[in-house]
Amino acid sequence: MKILTQLWLLLAFLVGVSIQQCTIEEFQMIAINMINSSKATNVSRTIRITNTYYNCLSLFDTGDHYSSMSVSIIYIRSDDLNNIHEVRYNLQCNNSVWEIVGNQSTVLRNNNTRYCEDCTDQTVNEYHCTVGDARHYYIAFFSNNVPMSHRGQPSIVLMTSEIHPVYYIVEAPGVDYYASNFVTNNTEVILNLTNNNLITSSHDQDKGIHLMINSDRVTVIGQNLRHHSDETFLCLPITSLCVDEYVYYGISVPRGNDTFSSNQNSSILVVGTEDNTLMKLTVTQPVTISVSNCTDDLTTGIQYSYVINRLQTVLIGSVDDLTGTKIVTDKPASVISGHQCAVVPGNVVGCDYIIEQVPPTTLWGRVYYTAPLATRRSYTIKVLAAYNSTVVDIYCNNTRECHNISEGESVNITLSLQEHCVINSSKEVLVVQFSHGWKDDNTDQYGDPMMTLVPATNQYSNKFQFSTLQDQSEDYTHYINIIVLAQYYQPDMIYLISGGLNRSLDTHQWAPFMVNNVTEAYSVQVNISKGVGEVVHSNTTALMSTVVYGFGNRIAYGHPGGNDITVVFAG
Image (cartoon, rainbow, N blue to C red; front, side, top):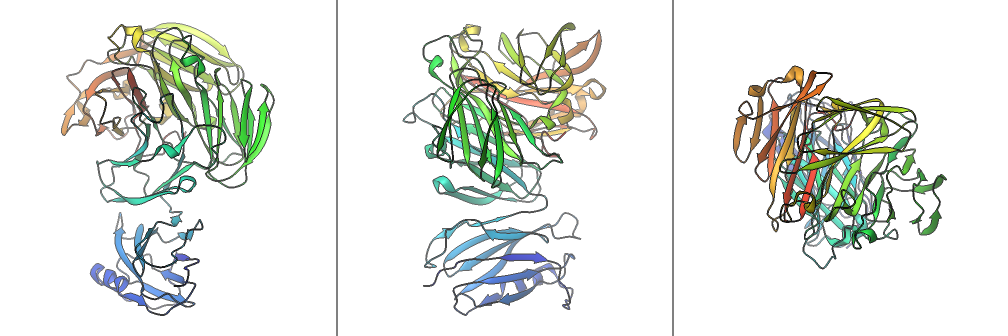
């Protein structure tokens, strides 16, 4: 049997060909019945469609063709019935299935070297496409402190608010992981990865994960589950901005005082999204890293330059705090930061894995609100500056303190159960919130450190979709903090959909955020059910934010709610 070496499909407007109007049933039948029966080593097909929903599809073949080759439409999506948004094809090479997604301006291509050699009973997910409304995610997981022999593994959770099924493709070629399927409205798809996906040292450089979802109304959560060491993070879509360079900063915590956590690493993980990406590193602690199989010892305060490729990973680790480590790239990258076993505060018993994906500085904000965490006696916030001479005013329960910090510097503030804080900055900053170790609350080993990004007000929306951590082995209590700006404080118009219930929040106790005796916003803590949910303000112009979190026996997790209307962290 000859090798299928390359397949190109180009969807474009039909030019110079007469087409007739037809029903959608006829449209589907024409596609299903397109079959070629000649043998060849190469296949090249051009599929052309018009921009009218009910116009018929015409197929043009070039070159020789494989035996038993067929193309069929199995899914069509159109928002307004005027333009075909998505056409999903099932290409069958004898018994092998090649799944393809496209639209009118999409090129679908084979991006790797696996081929359908014998056309027998194997399923191959080879094709990746660039679709107008698609979102691309590049992520990776650094390992946590618990041995891999213990229960758990990393996973990715997908959800959508689309009324139509949404197609996704996942590839991690470095560990030979491929998956594709549909995610449907208000349900979860959990993609369980393996321990092979975890990056355990700087020598692991090929474990990047690419996820393409053919919709912008999606939420993606990364989670790394391990016995007594769970954590989650909101995955951010890769966004090309009108900038010459992308600047990121690592964020973590100092070394803990106990013997165990003091040997765990503050970690930063960089994932390339395009080949030949120039990356410049300036670290805050002396580290040894490996890039493209070259090992370097990095000194603080000196900029080092490297070239990385798509799905290549670079792990930066130190037992000391890497907060403020600067990563500059000439193309978009994915930066994931945290700690293998963080102690928060540094003298409190109880360490845990923390991780978040960090947006580039151009997508940071100047105004933030932070609310206390349910059942916890205290919490900590960290404010990280991207520019020199950044003046940060922090108002907690109407009491002000001021800080002047420089590029890469941060300020940490520990707050009590009742303190609601407003952060106003003269320049862009990043804010994260930490829960404390279980000993801080004397709660019989309930809870532990977790880290979550705090959404800036330029990321507020009227609708959020969320998912709690998905761990079948641990008993969690789940919560959501909802913050709404004062001008949109209409609790009877704010609805929480969770656990099969749809309820307004007008009967809950809301707390104000005060600045100079003026109320700027309100917040509420709500206990939620495990699984997928939504928070919706019926005023479509309203501005809110959400943070989802939970606590169990010496474990905790937290992440922002996903925004399924606009790109999260796009300023």
